Image (cartoon, rainbow, N blue to C red; front, side, top):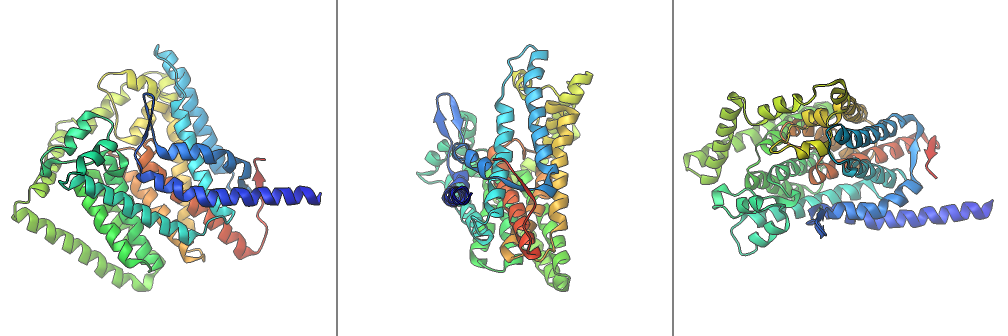
Length: 442
């Protein structure tokens, strides 16, 4: 019996060391280009995740009172698999399991970081530092792609999927839309918004690494401009207001200070915008033109409104309403895509899939909201507050682009949320000085 315990302890120690080395590489891979394998562009993140997942599930120890989350996640994967198989058959298309594999990767990422923090293999403060370093690297990459240098074309070509994207990078400076580390201009705006919010909250909650956080926030705004990402602007604005509300909730005595900071930031940004417009800055004028064009398209029922109406028109039977038409069928329809993710999830996976996926989002929002003022270490508090603010902000971002279904925009928030929940559960268990009630995979 003693030998069995020793072997189990040695196995856990080896798994912990593996995660301690591999998880930083997994997060850093967000800033790396995809790897070409045959006709597929495989994200480096997924390749590393495939190496880690078997060890994660063998060492997974999940608190029994949180049984709802893995149950709903498993049901969501099964529903996506059901839609991906039977949806194409109903429309005479070829079934595929690529979509359920993507959802397995998403939830596997969450479980990997949860396990690492819950088991104490990585310190929450080190996770915060690691995210800031990845943010600086990813945002510098976007600036290198944007500036007219001899290196910009090479860096752009390594991060695009089509010649059309590359042509946007090679356009005159004012009209460039760089893909950044997210491989797509709109997605890069969402990634920049995440980094801006994370750096701002780290400054407020942790009150450390202020210079690094300031650099990350400056680079994030520059990336939104470089990508000409309208929804990146909206997400940063929403995240800024939500950060102010959460900061006042956490530290009511400092409300006046946060109010002054918020008003000052808005005044400075508005002043800079007015100055650049007055100076006829070509980049700023192009951004204003893009907003004007979007407004005209929406008033005419085009752009994303057209996507909504066309997508909903395919839910014309009880089966498609409940289980959707599947991603495979949508790809076979010429010139049809939906960039409003809540609508896309409904069209592809039906009402059942929509309720499961957004039920998870609601569960996580409630979980993190309840723990905003929990007495935990500062690193864990940063992760919890960031997870709550960024998850809610990304629901705003998903009005224009994907959160669940994009590798580069969604993976880092899922890492952060998994780390936040794992660190919170470990911290609360230690505060109660009791052994957690868990269930194990092995």
